[in-house]
Each structure stands twice: as C-alpha cells, then as structure tokens.
Length: 345
Ligand SMILES: [Zn+2]
Ligand SMILES: [Zn+2]
Image (tube, rainbow, N blue to C red; front, top):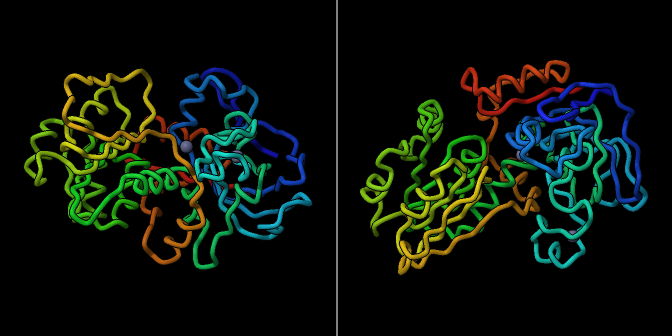
C-alpha cells in the first residue's frame, strides 16, 4: 500500500509499504478514506518532535472503514465507518479512569499514531486499543464532516470544556488557524455573552467575519485596549491561547481580567516567561495543554445535530498520490488554505 513516510529530517515521501496487520487482540485495521494534514506533521518534518521515529507513516487525523478487528474488540465491527482518535489510550490506567487520556501510562499512550507508530496518511492504518481509539460515525454525518473530529476538533472541544465559560463571559481566543477556528465553534456551544478572536492574518479574520458574523475580530496591535473596551471588567473573563507565537502567551495573560481563566492550548517552539511579580494580585488560573481527546462520540453527535460544522475549514482536497502538493499548500499557507483533505481509495 502507499504510505506517506517520515524518512529523515526535512523529508517525507510516498512509498510502498506492507499493509498493516493485527498485532494485539485489541487492535483494528482501518481502511482510510480521508486523511488531513496537521501542523504537527510539519513539526515532525522539521525535527521539532524528537520522539517521532524515522520510517513511520505520518498522519494522525483521519476517518475510514474498519476492515478487521482483533478478538477482544467489542465496540466496532468490519464495515463500520469510524473516526480515529489522535491519542492512543488504554482506558484502564489511573489517568484514563479520570479522563486524562493524554497521560495514559501505556507505552503507546498519548500521541503515538503518525509519530511513534504508523499513522494514517496511507491506505490502511492499525489502531491499537480500538475500543478507545475508534468511534462510529453516525449515518447522518459524512466522512468530510467527521474528518477533524479526532484531532483539531477534539482539541477545540477540550479547550472550551475546561475553560469554565458562563453566559456572562467575554471569551478571547488568540489564534484563528484550524485549531482556533475549531475552538471558536466549541466555545459558541456555551453561549458566552461575547467572543473576540485575534489573529495576525487578515484572511483568517475575514473567514471568521463571513462564517460567524457575531464574533468580534481583531489583530494583535492594541489588542489589550480593544479587549478592555469590549468587556466589562478590565479584560476577558476567559482567554484561550491557541496561537503559540513568540508573544501570544504574554498577550493572553495581559488581556485577562483579574481572576480570569487562561487556557493555553498552544504548543510553543521555545520557553515562555511567566512574570509572577508583574501579575501578582491578578489571581489568574492557568490551564495548559495538551488535549485529552476522549470526547469524539459527543462531538460526532453535535455534528449530527448541526451544532458544529467544520466542513468550511476544509478549503482544499488532494488525492493521496498528490499529498506532497497538499503539504506544499499547507506549509506555505498558499491560496487561503485552512485545512487540506487527502482522499484515499
Ligand atoms: Zn494534529
Ligand atoms: Zn491509560
């Protein structure tokens, strides 16, 4: 089968590999129908994910059809359309029992697919702990509608969920890339009084204005003044930092009102400064990433109910044989790209 593979630092290539087989009775084999490209794939390509193993198939955001299950798998059967969760988790350890699946203590716990074990930018993928890692896609939901459920949408859902949003809140989201836009949709489920989203890219803000006209958009210049003018208590009640740029962490806590929740979803390239003397008395609560991606079933139901729709985020589609072109578009943010779907058949 064809598999997009991390060969060495800076080099991915579409190569022929054997089709995966069941290695454990809790595994399932999924025939991939649609995959997507994520900025974490680029982090692997450029060597900023040291645990990524050369030779692995990349890709950790995909949907497909179950073709084979191990004898211990009970939740899915061959023929089921499924989303694949970015995180592998056993469901049984201390962390899994608390819903903190990102910290599953299994040797493959956390982000393994497309990083430490073969991922899904390929014709087939082996999914460990299939009862945890796969969720059936409701009949009313298409593969395209479900494509982002396992990774960026799971992240947005988790971020909104832990941010303690109330109906009186002004919520500031920093970053309007794919994860920021998924976060925006999930924040809307909590009906806060006001949502402000900040990004440096005017095209992304234009996308927000077109699809979510009730959301306020702003660029980083004078962000703090803008947030103060558009909130009641000297800053946002909740700040969700998704951008991960060199100064976005500082922007996040500066724009928060005293006693606010600041949720940090972003993954930074370098250390950030937490200037405790400067923020003394502001009494902030920080919550940090990464995602506990164990709510895919709930997210799929929200899509089926028409409450979340990420299809507009998928701006481009390429076939697996042309995946390098998809990467080129995505990496260089060409042609207004937000997300690229990769069709596999
Ligand atoms: Zn990702
Ligand atoms: Zn576990």
